[in-house]
Image (cartoon, rainbow, N blue to C red; front, side, top):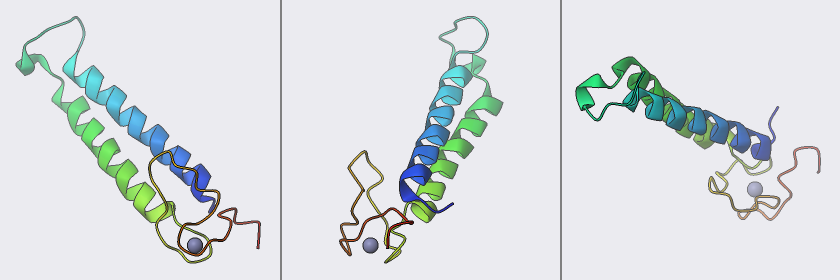
Amino acid sequence: MNNPKINRTIGYIILFIGFFLFYKGFKPVGVSDNIADADFVLLALSVAFLVGSTVWMIKKVRCPHCNKLLHLKLYNIDVCPHCGKSTDPDEK
Ligand SMILES: [Zn+2]
């Protein structure tokens, strides 16, 4: 599968899992304001997800025609801003 729009959505899902784990890591069972109570395993895992999603998007959100990086923000990427072709890999 090499559809940049789907790959970007997958990247965002991984990113949000990372944010969720980050939040859970800071607020372990019960609510505590003490930083020492943070769950560092979850925090490390969340950082891995955040970095992983960034790497994934940089590698996968690319134009199927010219292979240049497309917008990672929520801009419309139906048409490649570099070569002007549709980013749908089924469309020639
Ligand atoms: Zn292109």
